[in-house]
Image (cartoon, rainbow, N blue to C red; front, side, top):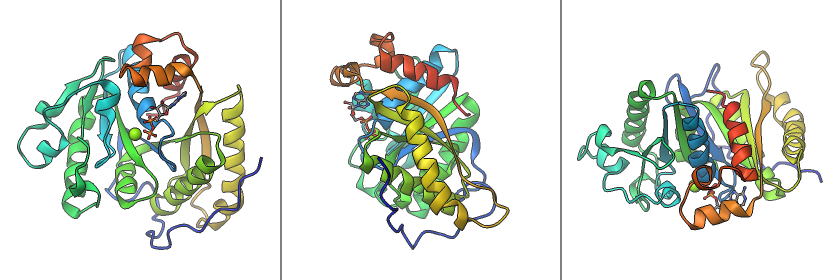
Length: 280
Ligand SMILES: Nc1ncnc2c1ncn2[C@@H]1O[C@H](COP(=O)(O)OP(=O)(O)O)[C@@H](O)[C@H]1O
Ligand SMILES: [Mg+2]
């Protein structure tokens, strides 16, 4: 299978900055954004279970539900938060009050769904998010941002706060095309030169590596030649491949963490292996 030629991307995207990720100053070192081109590929499932896998190794981990507006980390974790990010942003509650313990031994900061005011990235929300991330960063070993899908302002801004980006893709052609679009935009607008790939829902061992190679080939052909000379080239690194596993759906249905209730399943083991390769 080969990828279709890349679609033209948002011409309104900002020009490529030199150096690291743009948008919010220097990204903080222990922040990783989990993002994707296409929705529904498994970001939230991965964020929660990767956090649990890291917590098992003794790390202090915070997952921030950064899919503002369409947050659903609470659903996956069976939490009913009384205090959300919104309450912190409006000054109703402190950050310390909004950080909750999750079942997997990590902490969460939940957003609450349907917050239309966050469907657009205003200067105020940008500043609040940046300040919030700066405040939590020193308190944890890892901060994972569970972002929305696609290349909207909101998603790109959230990703810009992270030192490393983990792009989740499935082997489906639509997911690959959208992953390519995300990678291209991150390279062009944030100066990203290293992107970590988590290939989810693979049907045979090695499919993750094949997906990486295929995406790298397209990036080498269509993105790398367009980058400013001397700015380096975009390199995709495989962080893990997670098999399609009926246990995942079952765990999500039961609103339980796979890592907690079915740690011996193929998908859980794959996430433990991915956690070992956590870049930040
Ligand atoms: N490895 C997997 N095997 C089987 N089903 C999966 C796997 N990963 C994700 N899913 C299914 O996909 C659904 C969507 O995942 P989710 O994490 O909500 O995606 P996103 O956050 O990217 O929108 C999950 O509820 C689960 O049922
Ligand atoms: Mg999600």
